[in-house]
Image 1 (cartoon, rainbow, N blue to C red):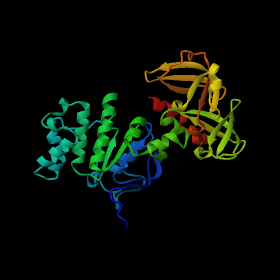
Image 2: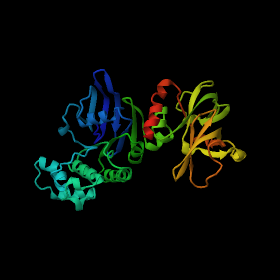
Image 3: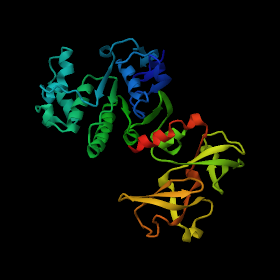
Image 4: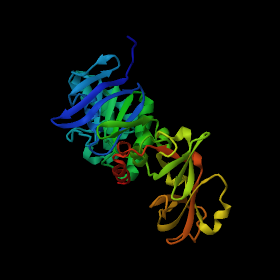
Length: 383
């Protein structure tokens, strides 16, 4: 059998609690040395999946393999994995040095000084070695927890919402720190989070989970630019979704009609089945949309998708202004306009034209199953 190194391989893994299915049968491979994120809303099954890898939950069915070893029935302490939790669970009566040294001492290793000092340097806490945890900031405590886990040289480090207790600025700094640490040590990180920005900024690969299933898996940029379902489109950022009818399917583009106008989407960016007379959810991100006052609409370049409407609300955030536009094609269409040259005419009540490059459009299935959870995804992503 080929040695798969530190791959994490889940085969047909599932978990039920009585009549409740927390994780439906899934197959998943996390490549050795990668930074992998399980992303989803509360109750989607991501933490349960992580706990089955750690051995903290026993699968109802399926197998967990680390490399070529089946560890499904092994207890947590016999698996080459360590877990960092949101609470950090540091020992308050021990200083930083002894917290990090704990795992080595428990294994009977007496000479720990060099290893602990190297690990503290990795997480940039060498000067804090003799301080107690309560004297550290939240970010420092988090790095102690990571160091304590890494010093045991696990094949896989599992991170269960480790940044959830930090404020926004510190959380962003710690995202960079975790990515740096993972790059330096080169082991597999599996990170559970509900924060889409966190997953996209840190992970090489993201698995978006919904209702106990993996909705879509891929590189962050691929998931964002080409979501496969309405749930993913709204969970990873914000999307304007226009229900449109297929007018024609000739050539490389699919031409659709919505609200009395025509719109185009590249056939290659259409995840939905396409047939003349059928329906497709046409999607476009707010930041890829331009907003032009109706008086200037003649200057819009030919070939762009266009939707006419009226501004109903605006919100200035400093770097950009968010506009909400009602139109026949899409009530509540959102557009983000960067704060460069602000048009003072773009106020609530103004008639405008939304327009964008058809190459930035994507097409999704309108079937109820494909749209399930889309509204909840959008709300969760904004909270």
